Image 1 (spheres, rainbow, N blue to C red):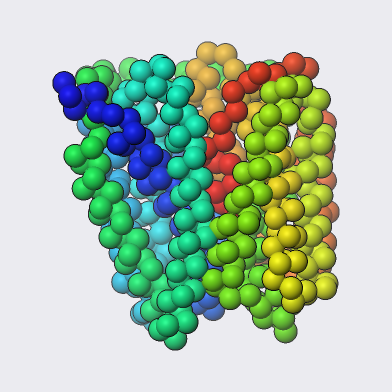
Image 2: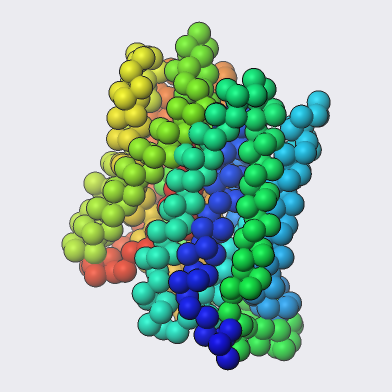
Length: 436
């Protein structure tokens, strides 16, 4: 009985910290690592964008998490698999064919992380009562953000320090991933003893798989029968069209030497830019966006948010043409872009809530997040080839032009005037994990 009522402080923070780390490693740290290992921008953007796929299709296998074993068992298993994936990356990096084999382990990590997301979110609902769920929303969001800071900032800075000490990029990143693997073994051991045993966990496993999948099919069909669904899908896929391309090239741009058109920063400096200043400004922008939308409604701030998420991309045009030597000027420029993104992304998160309203809203929101990941995956795949064709300066001009679809779809979507007012905004999972 005591295990069934374990103190949530003993497992909620650690569970959501563990949830955030593999996502940021797969989506962000992999880009920086491959750039330091001399992989081309074309290959980095193409292959790391494919790693979005597990989050695109995770609604397709989410019923399996309900009918096979318990969510607690899924959490523990996937944490071990994530650790194994990180150890696999570490093992392959010193080899000559590291790119192919490390990508295979990143795929293992990505599918395990997406499954961990499903299980952890379901377990959160089973392990807490209604009051605790409301209270710990902010706690889980905070620790997910701390995972973003740790991954984009401290972890990259650690790799940079190891580079300077070892003199080998491959060895430095291998050490970093071995440490990460050890961390996830510790997560497994800790959660093996600290996760509670909710009586309801696993009850769906006694239901007929046929009945569960029939209900899932009905849920999918009802989503695509929504009024003006094509416009909604266009918004989900195109609102971040420019950002999806920018996010794959931003870190390589900072790392490339000035002779190649970049800014010539080191690994530690890039970790500081995106993991500290960037995350701080992103968070501030998101908080302000949520506050204003809750006070006045999304419709009142929609166009300001569309401007905020797109126009600050112009700072990269400035950085590419001027190539400033001031580290703090670079921080200020990136911080401005991240603040605008955090503010503007509120519109996207709120509209996914709006599009999910009605029966099956939880499942429909999960479908929306799948389309969100698809909207990041497809444009990102080709961004490296476009950059290498145009060069950094013209690429960032193209990025500003690529914001046009965002304005078009924002003008077409159906939206109630008062929606968002007094809405509870929690941007914990997908706020900007794929950034730098």
